[in-house]
Length: 626
Image (tube, rainbow, N blue to C red; front, side, top):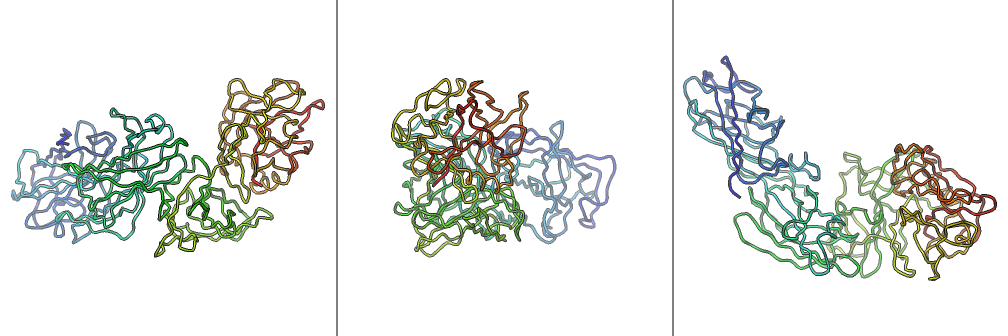
């Protein structure tokens, strides 16, 4: 890319002289009466959302020294803030003039402005990029531009400043291969994470050298996937600090509930470069990613690097787990589950360490059964600070837990050691694993998958049952009236909603194998866990009878939607206003007198009768794991 002129005149003017510029006297040289003016250009494409120009409210910083002084010596201008406003002008916070003895100046300008500026006696500034650059402000705020010009004599002519990127920009594109289409990839919204890069450094304004911090982080890119003119899926990018890469870098991609690693063989990320990583996206018949091949194109170079796809991982990237297809992931080794990761709700107001937070928790698995007494809290969501890395131990008898707070930053990676045990520190020989969403696979007349969510010690379907066949393959009749035998009912405006009458429940053949219709004790444990707060188990959009939206908090992720009910006297009623769900004995062949009832205007998990005039209603069915 060539130079993009911004057309910005930085005009620094005043009506009187000053004896000091910045925070301290710079030297014995006094200021004159010739105002300093600037013109500015930004070299190459920028990362700002405005795409090539400063925006109103943007702030840059300015330093100036009288040679032979350096920035570590006395400063004539010390971190003067320039704010972009109207008239294509950067307005200074203070008045600025050339020295009255017509001495020359060396100028250094940078963007974005930092209050701390440069330390006394130093010429280096701390530079960092945001780990989560998905928001516009944090993406733009990760950029860093630097301009310098030396030996400038007193003149009425503007001083030209050319801002160059001191960091690097990485773009990502998914290239649909055979069996994949751009439209389908965009709709599935793959999660992409760039892992293992240093996000903090110090930049010396004189030598242009970086000094790096110890920590590495995962970076979430900015942008939205969209099909471009080449038929690729592009639109994601991030800003990174230039650095040497001893082991290359790695892109983690989660698509349709599976996680994949794409190692990229790149030895060094240079300043002021733009890198494009192409990932070949291949879908199998099950619409799962089958392979990834990466290539790199760097500014000013025509280098292409390829990599083999790697579906087995030595580390699991927590940031790349979207939990969209399910609230639970299983970690596999040689086809056996060795660990389970849950996005769940930890709620305890009475324990020695009260907690009310959504969390990502890691559990070891043995014999296909998660050990809920040994949970490691990887992240407390929406909770800042060094409070992560704690433990949670569940009591399965009464659905309670003991929580021990952590003292670390969010855990971004975990490993499985050679013994198959999850660990937060990298072992000498990590076990190679694969990662996939845990889904209920209900194969009746055709395969239907349901997301799963853990609430306390219970595992629930995250969606209502929508089967049209019993679990033995027999077809369930579609009914339009009650009292005519077992069947299911649909809302004409939304045929994805299925309600089942009591006769269908009593067959004992509705629940998928390994799952069952919840009984009254199951609902009681859930109700106790959330303190009878229905809002925590609701999901979707709820409305009043006047079609006004009703608030939903949905912390548990159970996401019970207002699908209404089918009444013997009124037909389909209360769609968007209430939810009615079946409860039965564990066999599914005995029904009590009541069903679970949630209403738009109540935060109570209530009950209602399941018969009207001796005829069963039709209601939703949410199954629980046996």
